[in-house]
Image (tube, rainbow, N blue to C red; front, side, top):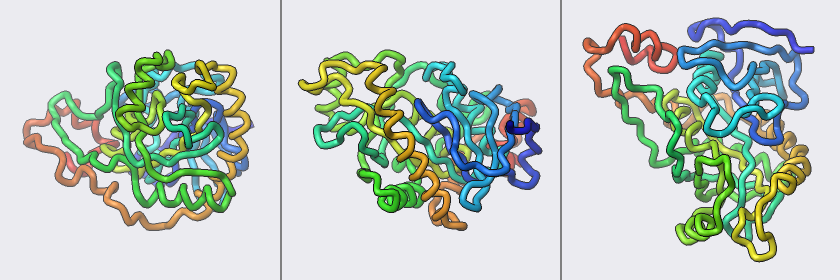
Length: 299
């Protein structure tokens, strides 16, 4: 049984450098050695669950179940800010998201994987920024995923012999209902590739936190547009997730094993020129709240 500990401060020695956020069907990381549970309070509230910290393929890793173990949290109820902030506090530099998605393209079949490089946000109930409360920041988000980390995931899929596609657009809806047929047809007309309910919010917050972020999307269904698959059922989704679980674990191990030591992307400097507020006018309470995310820029 994993030991439970509290995290050290954000300025201390990193407890993990690679974060894995598991979605529907992935509630634990197999093969994690010296695993221990870490409860991390953040200025934005509590994460979805305890983070499990350990070593995988010689690398320090933190795993978090996005919906909580036992799948207790709706997509709209997830405290995305606390989840990303907790990763940052632990010292994480890169986050791999594992997510169940529906396919909007004929050639993207259930059980295939896709590593998207674009998102389209159709959510409406999410808090998708750390800023506010007297601080304004605008990060670049034209390329919302980390190209280096996405490349690592793609190469890992090849080595794990998992059929995966590189590039494409993930449209993120509010949920928790699946799409109507009219919505699915519009999404297809707009050229989107896959559909899910969580990742765009994570990606926005990861960019603000200067963390690399990439998605390994596991296709479970054809949404509801396909004439041979009249509707999406939870039974179908969960059955395909179970079939893909081993593939997902294999790809994660390959990704962690091959992770480069140095980041060659620009993710780690996302806030360098993004904060426009006069530092002298930042309220003290906001400065404290943002310390784990942007402390080095706030003076």
